[in-house]
Length: 258
Length: 354
Image (cartoon, rainbow over all chains, first blue to last red; front, side, top):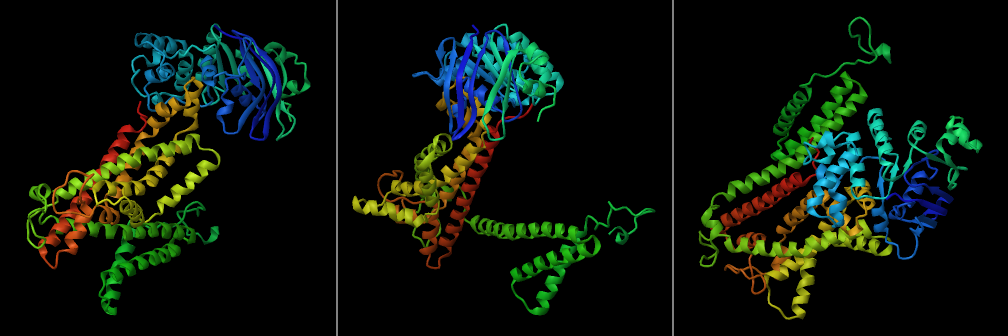
């Protein structure tokens, strides 16, 4: 049930500050698209506009179109809550709900939305935890608090929580930046498996990670501090890392930047 | 500087300096106390408070002097800061301990089951006997009703301010909450009293509850606001990103995460209004008889009972004893509330165990 995302002419603001300007791109279904670029260039902001999380920030607003299989997410009458159920998100820092057990954390999306059958809940939790490669580590302590897990496990718990509601797109905002290499590897493997079922967009500062996990890569940049971030180019990952069409991309990837 | 440092072992180390032994603060404190007693006796100072203050000053000065000589100026400043904290702590604790000690000592004389389960209905103020049953009932009902009014309004106001409030309305609410925090209790009482006079009502318990609710509300708003602000934004975003509506996020994620702190805040606010006398005096009047109906007729309450026993004692020891015993009951009640609040906070705190 993965879906395609078509973005055209998207500009996002924080109050009067323009954070990103005029971004257009297509995210293919059942693939991994990586966003790379220097800090502050608006990758995360752009990611958050894709499931209408940007407007949660005070003063955040968006112009332009985001089409999810021909339906404009910013169109009239679109319910942002429904959008977020369709497009899930994993954050930079693992953020399991501290008052809930591991089981409840995974079940949270279903429970809090109130749309579930009790009999299915156990299956969904097990399936999601297996999907996030966490089941074997936590199956004996599902009732323990989620905050007692290690950082890498917590992040996989958050991924399990996100995929438990069966989204069609999964957005990941630097999901490995707080994790050690082993946990990072676990998550990268997981991303490879998840792309069979979901459309995945991942923001990363780690160039090797982008090269390893993604099918397509988008490079963002900003012309100067305080200027809005822009999409420089998006192409197949192989091309971006071997033979990019823009000089700035090559400079950034090879570390000759700025 | 290194050449002036004392030689330690063969090579003088720039990282090591002379340090006072561990027991030195105690020694200096003992010396300061002894010196203060001597000064007090020689100078003919009667008040023990003066002795204590002199000892405190001597302790701080002595610490600085000795440490500056042995360890150096920076370490001396550090030790002075530490000793100041200790002196201030003692200044704060000594009156508290003395208050509790006095209350317990004088209160236990008539404090028993009989005292807790009987009213003053058939006892003249000058006679021994009687109890605080009617006052306990009054306090529980008035404070309970006030909490029922103030806690939900206060918590909801705080939720609005933290989760929704933007712009002028929330600024105005914050301002008025601040103003309300500063309202003297007697003014809250007078406000309700003016309503009572307009409506031509006799004093009754619920009028007191209303005044107490006015006093309690800003305290609840403030503490709840602080607790809600402590909930990390990431949790809200995590919930929103799962497609959970905002109101449900607040209800199921934000409030459960902060419920321990919120309960503590409410309990402390309850403890604060339990001791209020002025509005109760104006609005509830007090009575010697048991009145379980807070909506009709004068009621008693613990702080009011203490005041009235003291005021009407006319030199009778029986009334004094009852006032002290009631004060003991009041302190115990507030203390129990605080313990319960702590218990709930610990029980509900987000679990971190593995």
